[in-house]
Image (cartoon, rainbow, N blue to C red; front, side, top):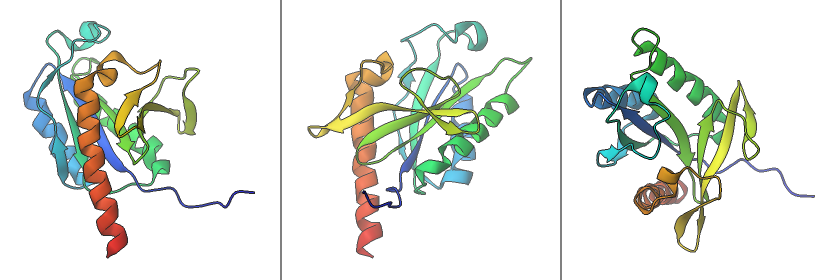
Length: 178
């Protein structure tokens, strides 16, 4: 029988896209109020792997990926997703979202994203939220699964996740050496 252990704390991330670049700073500031200071901010990335959001959010969507200082317990992901959904609705105009906030976490072994959508490769976490292991860390880098969205499977996004993992590893080292 395996021993029940507390899970490794995780670094929270948010992948935010919008057609209004001015909203990105507001979203980052709002997220830091709950998740601690922003320790990583990606360059502005084109959101061009799907047109799924075009009808609701418009054309020329741009994305930034953020990582935050405060470590979280993975069990807090459903509450975090419910909160980020409420932020999206708060910034909506005429019932159309102006921003999409995909929250998740990175730990030493994986990138997990939260979703309200069930699918065969997602596990129910509670509060109407599912979790997806989007990338796995093997051979020194993050690697995709067959179900990984094309943007996250790209070399550019995986490199971002590798950089955030390095920051996460440094946080764990300082946490356990002090």
